[in-house]
Length: 100
Image (cartoon, helix red, strand yellow):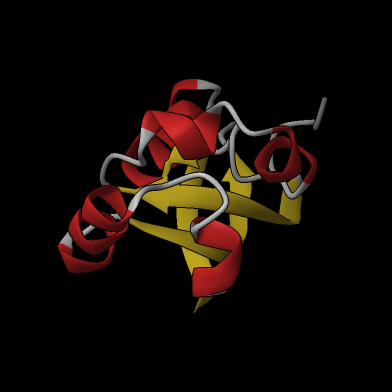
């Protein structure tokens, strides 16, 4: 816990949009922090609900899963839909300040 006025900086994996269930259930994706990743908007909302302000994303980088790895979990139709969707996986670095 931080005292009021304290701040943190953390990097984490988040999602945008809905990931296919087959990816969420894959052990390899769990080990890579993809399966358990929270949707980015919800992630930032949780930080604010816990009493933090000045929540800011300093770095956001897409995580690209190689098509060969995706093909282990998705059939051709599912793979095409995923690639054409707005869904994505990102590494973000966030800072926030504990409200007083």
